[in-house]
Length: 82
Length: 413
Ligand SMILES: Cc1cc2nc3c(=O)[nH]c(=O)nc-3n(C[C@H](O)[C@H](O)[C@H](O)COP(=O)(O)OP(=O)(O)OC[C@H]3O[C@@H](n4cnc5c(N)ncnc54)[C@H](O)[C@@H]3O)c2cc1C
Image (cartoon, rainbow over all chains, first blue to last red):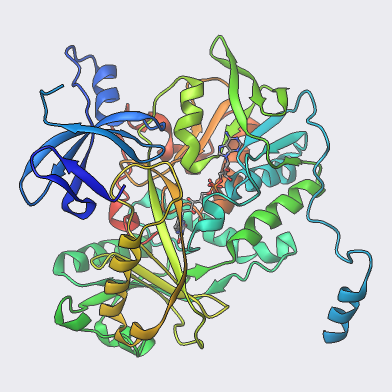
């Protein structure tokens, strides 16, 4: 991946973006075990993941669906869309 | 020597025996199966045989020995960490390194150079003082030095870094060393094989046989093996193995890249690291400058390398050493770093009985190869974590007892 498609600004060089990690839902109930799992554990195996990305110059946070094995982006969209 | 070389060239038979012999078939069962033929897996096999007399062991490697992060790293060995647990562990490691060439009867090119971690800001100086005090208390040679000491040791350095990031001082660690990485894997492999350990290359583990929370065997591309003890020592592949085992860890995988220049006459005696400029450099015994930077900023499970990396690295190296402007980079590569949130490894028992983990070695695990092998071998033999690795157990996250090694491990691998 060298270019990333920002849903607002279109295709831009990767150096303009920052990675925000996988999209994760905080647990609704918070037993200690669930909380620890949410805080620390990650889905570390390769696969297609929904991730937060940030277009730095325009201050746009958005979602990218990306295969972390091949580094291919499948699609990008703003939070709440699709 | 030249005559010997000539004999070598004319000899019909290879005068040196191969490093190890791979049996044609896997045995149906082994006492211990080690997944991963990197330095850590092979060192564990060696110490299982040597310290504990356990030789009915198979090491399974999906590619070739040392082809993972072991053969891709920039080989910095040091023990000037920040936490007492870290310093104690890595220092025990440095002690094992010092005699390792003798022990394995192989020249590992272990070369003690001294290690400077440069500080360009007051806050970095504060961390250096903190580290120096912890190190000294633990008996590790480590001190804060001023810019003049840096200049005396490395006359070519631009102390002002082009005026952008003047060097205020450094943490100096005399025992800091480098070594020949693949020789470490091969040396441990050969020595383990001589004691009876089986080594299989091109043998990927594809599944784990787990029943009632206990390991019973592993599935490989060449058939199944029954065993009651399995070690996973697969660095950047760890999340795939823990997924097979059905438990979660904090490990995420990011590429870490490195490169070397064309060979130069010897000019750089020491290892130089700059956290603020995100670079480090040493000169190999072949004369190449071995250079690295910080981690790639996002998760990828591949060993691809990027132009962005060499470009960024070169600009920072030139801040330190402007005279290198005309020197060519001749190779670059990447490894897959298994990162943990507290920059400490994850070692010991797992929720699956009989399955042991040696992982979370991120960007800093080469120096730990001997001590990780020794402590994991003890942990497997006794089914009880070795005292030196208690702080690195997987449950430290559940217990909110993280290790906090970031200040000493983030860039200075
Ligand atoms: C560019 C770079 C620079 C670094 N610099 C330093 C440094 O200066 N100092 C330092 O201390 N550390 C450094 N490190 C970190 C260090 O290289 C690693 O932490 C260390 O080598 C890990 O060794 P290992 O034996 O655990 O893993 P590896 O050498 O990666 O071995 C794991 C092996 O497991 C095999 N494997 C994986 N999955 C399977 C499977 N399913 N079945 C069978 N086999 C499998 C892999 O093929 C691999 O050979 C650096 C790393 C990189 C990438």
